Length: 499
Image (cartoon, rainbow, N blue to C red):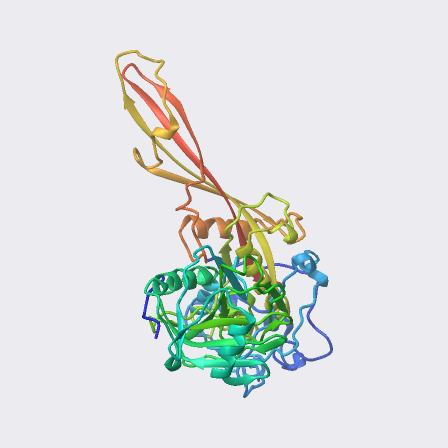
């Protein structure tokens, strides 16, 4: 058994040309719009913000469909070009099942955004430069490497056939005799898992498998227990020239060629449990691989999962369903229902950028997740280009009438001397890059930033990317009055009801 190791606010009204209505039915929840005023169905934000409990008249109450199945998510966009024309963008709702329970905590649901892995992949290959032989022993024989066809067939005679041309031994019937292999395997598994969300984990060696040429194996990647989130295969050195692992999940596919420096390198492949299809194909050369199962160590930490990199996240669809339900009913189900959602992007983009210009991997993933449910439930996504200026002023004492001192802005930080003053300017643009004139919304966003209101992925104040400027604004015989400014730029996604 492989030993355990650890890896590591305001309200506003907007107009919009597009209309979600067709016929007499509300396309979001199936209510008859003839019995509910359009104003209430689109959402009376002011009514939703009244103090104290609010009860809608009986004729305005909605009868929502109930869905016995578990809610599913809308498939996130991989190509953002379709949303540059937001009015004509139509998201796919194939397979989407709305949630039955809309009394949800929006902030809690949107915590799933933290888990999205913009640079992630459905599988990852790491070719180890370490040539340590694990010293595989079965029936008192040490397997020589690189693997030969003769050795592969000899192993097959001792293994259990689990598929056509595929033979396996479980951990009770073999071992790794080289004491150095433990540390090599640990490093290799960690490197293969590098593109998954980092959590403390344990890994155990469970089996060794031979695929005899010409052979292929469909891998079973079902979890063996709740905390099992990944499986790592270690393809042992051989003379192979044509072995490939084909992986697919949802609308993503990947083919990993396993031939690079194959005679003397270990190929570590990390695969998520729950992957729809993973097929190992070796048409002309036999291969041998070790299998490690990886388990999350902390039961209170969410497991890394395919949804981190592929979507779809039902939590995000549920947020928009609950938000639209609240607007349609004219009363907030709970205090977590927002007036807007603001999310700071990791990249900073020039004014006038369109959706295609959003290039940071995590930003593309977040926008791709937001867009389908936002449009389906009648919301609009804007870009807010923010100029964030912090400044402070103070008197610097010097020698009498020495008026020509020089000061370096890099020697000071805003707030080290004097009080900090803050100025926030906001320019709104649509996803096609065109400027949006909405002073009230721009002021609302500026106020939220100034007051440190709820902004998802907020890191503007912690950023060190600001441009500093230091100037002398006044002088006396003994003092220079200095003013230090630091200007930071940021881009935010802003989601509001498309009324």
